[in-house]
Amino acid sequence: MGHALDLKYLQLVVAVAEEGTLTRAGQRLHLTQSALSHQLAELEQRFGIEVFQRQGRRLQLTPLGDRLLGRARTLVNQVAELEADLLNPGRTAQELRLVTQCFTCYHWMPTLLVDFERQHPNVAVSLVVESTRNALEALEAGAVDVAISTEEREIPRYHRNFVFEDELVIALSPNHRLAQQAFIHYADLANERLLLHPPSELDKRWFQEMVNPDGCKPGPRLIQHIPVTDTIIELVAQGFGCALLSRRATAHAAAQGRVVLRAFAPQPLTRSFFAFSRRDNPKNLPIDKFLAAVQEHCASPA
Image (cartoon, rainbow, N blue to C red; front, side, top):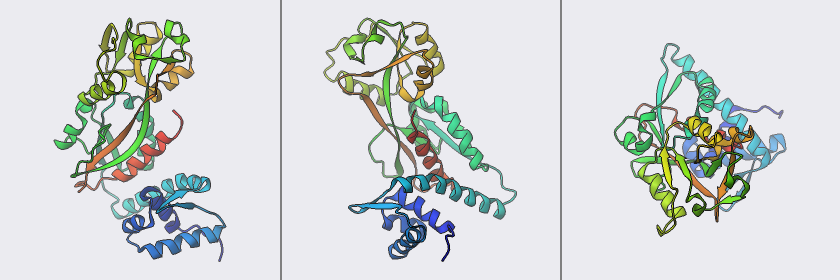
C-alpha cells in the first residue's frame, strides 16, 4: 500500500484534535462519522502508529499524535493559502482586527503575529489597542473581529473558544525586601507601591474576588496605572515599587535576572482567556486558523 501521507489525513488530525469527537469533526469536514473513523483507522494502520486514544466520548492525542498535529496544522494552512492564491491571484490582504482585554498580551503577541502572517500572507492582523479595556464592547460595536477576554459566560451571538491560561505574579527588584520570600500574600503589599496596567471593570472584580473577597485586608499604600509593560518592568528593575504582571509577559526579564517573580499565596492567581467572535463571520476571515495559532503559541513554555 505504501506510506503516502495524504492531505486528508492531516485535515482529519487537525479537525479531530480541535473538535474533540469524530461527530463534530465530521460535520466540519462534511464527512460521516463512519467515513472519518475509517480514515483514522487507515492512517494508523498505514504507518503503524496510534494518533488518538479514546477517553469516554472524546478522543485525546497521544504524544506522537501531538507532534503530528503541529506539523499538520502548518501544512493544512499552507495548502489552503496556496489554493486561495491560485483561485484569486489578485486578491488583497484581508484585515483581521484583534483586541485583547489584557495589556500584557501585547508584549508577546507581536512574535505570534509575525509567524502567523508569514504562514498566511493574505491576512493582515491589526491590534486595536485603544479598545483594550472594552474588548467585548468593541466586538459588539463592530470595531474588531476577535476579542480575547477573561469573560467566562457564553454569549449566544458569539463563538467562544478557550485560547490560553496565564498567571498573574508579583514582579520585584532582586534587591527588594519581598524578593527573599517564596510567595507573596496580599497583606505583604500593605506598605508597597504597586504598578499595574489600567484594569477593566472585569479585571477589578476578578482580582477583588480572588485576593480580598471580604474587603478587610489592607491594600498597597499606592497603586499606579501604567499601560506599557516594558515601562513597568524597567521601573520595577530600578526598585520603583513592585508590579502585578503576567508571568508570560515578564518571563524574559526574569530570565535575564532583572526582576524576580513571586506567585501569590495561598493559591496562584491563574485565569483563563477566551476568544469571542461573531458566529456568522461576515467577512469570512480565517479566525479558526488564527485562534489555533494563538493556542499553539501559548502552549509553549512562557
